[in-house]
Image (cartoon, rainbow, N blue to C red; front, side, top):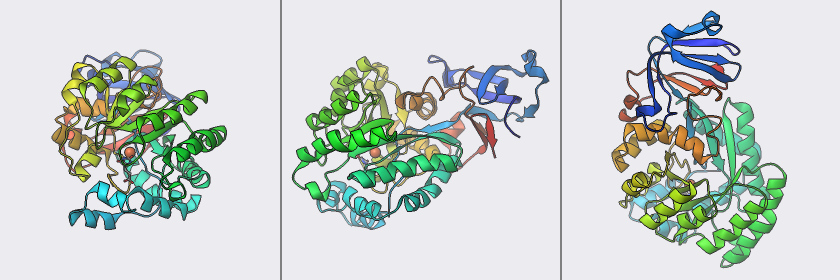
Length: 407
Ligand code: DI6
Ligand code: FE
């Protein structure tokens, strides 16, 4: 099967487009017309109008079609791995203790700085392929393990290069404010100035930055420090987002919301005041159950408050070598349900329309609607709930990226 005009018929469609309907509107015995890279018609197989009814037909034999999945928070590009710290944590050390002892993020910084762009690409490709195999058509990739201009650039170049090697849309996020590098030890404020005034403008100028992120936490940066970086991002016209309230409540999410952030991510320690600030600003809550699970966290993100205040909830892998060595978005959906008690409907919204919102892409992808890009996933299941229900099983039949069928 190939690009240009075709018609998908005999499908169940989870549109993920209508806010107040289950799975954003479900169509039984549906059909979708695709022209070049766009969806041009959606309806029932029996009602396909001209000229679409003359197009080449692909009978999907009752399979479920969803939007292509979106992993809106990953650290997919990095050097080395941290299996040794996994062992240390199993012997009793906490994530924060490992970080304070010079391990954690900084050990990945050492391995990342030692790698070339091509090596970073080669190490990330198998991880990307694991996501592609589950119908992922858009992914966000952060820098943040270089922490100097050259190495942050290398990470972003590697992320951009991945998009030329595989049929996937990649958004890059500059996470220079992830940790204080050894050269700036005990001079976090100086490092923040360096990030805001040197690294960010240079990398943005090179067209490598789609958004700006930071790690707002006791072991990383304060809301005031992050605001310096966000001010610089806003001067460059770049959207911001924040790792906030992961291990403690510093008010990072509310600060990010006050800057109009696309998303605040993690959020286990978020309180209702922070939720209200996010609701007011339209900031998406990105929940990362892989990190919750890996760190054996027990503080639940405030799901009830997020629901009450109608904050859109996205779900992502947080794929990274320390707190979430996870490369399955389907397993992430299952974790969101089992660990956070999210419904399968919410979990699927979390990796489609709400993930698109978290990346500022909701006008292009994330739901099945006329005029959106034909990014679709076709599943051998009877109901959308099965995607979230199964553990460690991939029912993907085929996926479509910008109208091109990859199988
Ligand atoms: N929060 C996380 O969960 C990752 N980064 C962050 O700011 C963890 C990064 C790591 O441990 O390597
Ligand atoms: Fe993260």
